[in-house]
Every structure is written in structure tokens, then in C-alpha cells.
Amino acid sequence: MTGRLIPREAGIHPPAFTPTYKTSVLRSPQRALISFDSSPSEETGPTFGHVKLGALDNDLLLNYARPGASAIGERIIVHGRLLDENGRPIPGALIEIWQANAGGRYRHKKDGYLAALDPDFGGCGRTITGEDGSYAFRTVKPGAYPWPNGPNEWRPAHIHFSIFGHSFGQRLISQMYFEGDPLIARCPIAQTIPDKAALDRLIAGLDMSETKPMDAIAYRFDIVLRGHRQTLFENRPEGM
Ligand SMILES: O=C(O)c1ccc(O)c(O)c1
Image (tube, rainbow, N blue to C red; front, side):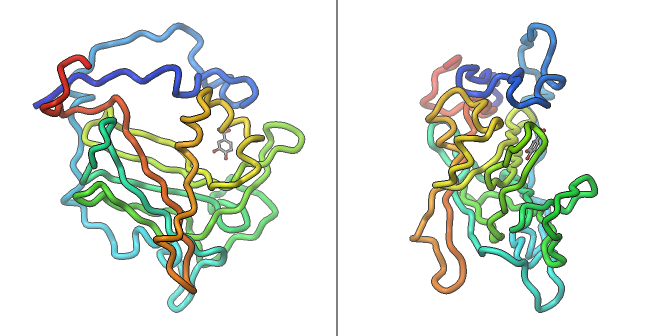
């Protein structure tokens, strides 16, 4: 059964044109947006259940490391659940992450930051959500890094997330921040989000219950795919 894609809530998502985040200026549309009804190309999508992931794909501590080695940095577990706007789990969705290393440097040819590359850290991982929508990664806490948006601007520690839900229109790309980081309040990218509660939902909380004693600290990050569902649920009236 297919259903309409529900448009984004404009008041929650950051506006495209935010001059304090300089690169948004050239990237943002110059004309008013036009809305089209969704069609099968948005309402269908790939299914990932058949994709054979590698055993270490969700383990960034080891997936780029030399045999016997492990990435340098604060060892963390990032876990949570992928939910629809009614709080129901979304199973079988592909979650991909990418991030800087513990020193704040990406393994990317365009990243020339002074911090050293870690030979045992690549910075990319992927996983598929379980039946209960749950997912987990093992990684290092990324470092903050400077960027040329202004004379002295630093990105808070963050992990990039891409989520493929059950239709192409259910794609979400976002960033996860860490509880207690004073750079979040100073970040022009995070501060493009007009709604304080919506920004709070991008901040993972320390989760002692999933921490592995003497091994890794855990953060919980639940992801809610709002308003883009393909499948209609029985208790959800059409058009809601
Ligand atoms: O869009 C950008 O310009 C930009 C710059 C630095 C970042 O860390 C980032 O995630 C985006």
C-alpha cells in the first residue's frame, strides 16, 4: 500500500538560506519552491535486507585498522532506534555514518587540517536497523575542528548520518552532536535550526546503561523520520 509523502515541517527544518553559515548562500534556491505531488519515484525505494554487510561495517574502531590495531581516541558506542513520527520502529533501513578522527581530521583529500591522520581510522561505517528499529556503531569520539566560515570558528564534535528509509522520499541526512558540548551553541550550522527542541533531538545523550565497563562509553541517538512515510498505518487517517 502506498501513501502520500507528507511535506517537511518548514518551521522545524533549518531554512536553506542562512548567511551566518556562509556556504548556504550559494547553495540555497534563488526562487520560490514549487511543490509536486509525490509519485512512484519518491514512494518506492531500495530494500536493504538482502545487502550483505561486512562483519566490521558498523565497527569504526576496527574496520580500517591494521590487524591487531584499533583507532586512536575515546572509544564510544553510538546506538539508538530509528522511528517513524508515531514512534514506531523502522526496520531494514540503511544507516551510514562518516566522521572526523579523534583529532578532528577527516580522511579526505580536501581536508588539510593540522591534526594527524590516524592510520587505523577510516571514518565511515554502515548498518541496517533491526526488527525493533535499533542500530549501533562502535567508533571514536570525533574531535572538534576549525573551518573557514569566520576568523575563528570550530565545529562541535559531530557524526554525519545518512538514513535510507523505505522510499526515496524518506531519505534523511543529518548530523549528531554530543551532550554537553559548549561548541554547539556557537556553531552557525547547528544554530540554523530555529527550534530549540529540534536541535536538542540532534544531540546524543550519555547513556551509562549501554556503556561497556573498562571499554567504551555509550551515547544514545534516536532518529525520527517525520512526515515522509510511504506506508499508511491503520490508525492514521488519510491526509493526516
Ligand atoms: O557545508 C559546509 O560548508 C560545511 C563545512 C564544515 C562542516 O563540518 C560541514 O559539515 C559542512
